[in-house]
Length: 388
Image 1: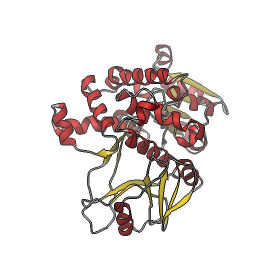
Image 2 (image 1 turned 135 degrees about the vertical axis):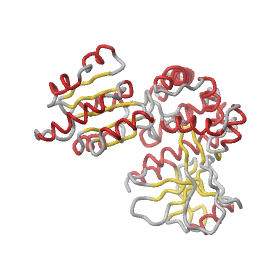
Image 3 (image 1 turned 30 degrees about the vertical axis):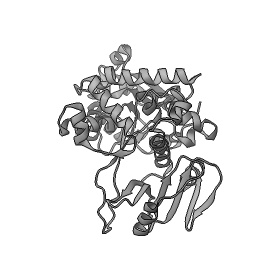
């Protein structure tokens, strides 16, 4: 088992809150992590996709008080969102009896309905945590090449071969489109959503152009926006917001859009192996996406992530503002072993005056690439952020 960074955070959250929601895409490892945390305390696990377990909890006010002294894990909570109302009453009753934190751990694919139900019913009683696919720090340096090609879903990353990994990701995409998303409520044609997802993969890290996507899909702009909102809400796509600092420049206002798992990017584009990836135009955007997801994951809670771009071409791939800091870290991402900085990076830094100027590149050596600019590996910067 690859240790997950969220293990300690989840354990702490359960000690401080009556209920914790662990949200993330299917097959990302939520159940494995929950059961690992549960080893430290008496617990009961219910899979709400199982008819037998749903029958047990058909009358929650009767069943759950029988396990008041245990951590109750409710998996696939989006199948029975009406449970949130019952949990509220049980939590309040338990508090009056002196039974406070660590009562319930709910797992589910993040959805608009799920978040709405829990926020309305459990306000002040629940803490949200997000479990993303494995990142560069969790996978480790020896698996970095595999992580780039296969992505961070555990079964994909740890598959016996690249072919087996690709087949797993292809099945994952089909299942999401044909079964999981329809179960969450939206009636979206699977083929239309696949085309949108594939177009986003082709443009990995590009500026969002909703009107162009709408024309390609033969739908209106509002429909594209709702489809994209769904993929973002399911933690499958990230909209990286533009920098909004008070600078007298014509800043780009559209977000950059990334398919969050680079392995899914490659599956959508039918990239089967490393050789095909290196020859594909998406290679640079795919590496950039992997680095951005890993660095955001390593940053301390409360960090803010943006990119910077002006109409004149000044650009920074990632601006990370750490908690309590006034100025961001300016991070440029290069895949090659001999990174070169464009004039736009220096112009952007001159405007923003970042706390640090960094270049993440594909090598291992750490060196000064220019005055005040340091080049380092993804692993080195990941470790720095994790220790911040």
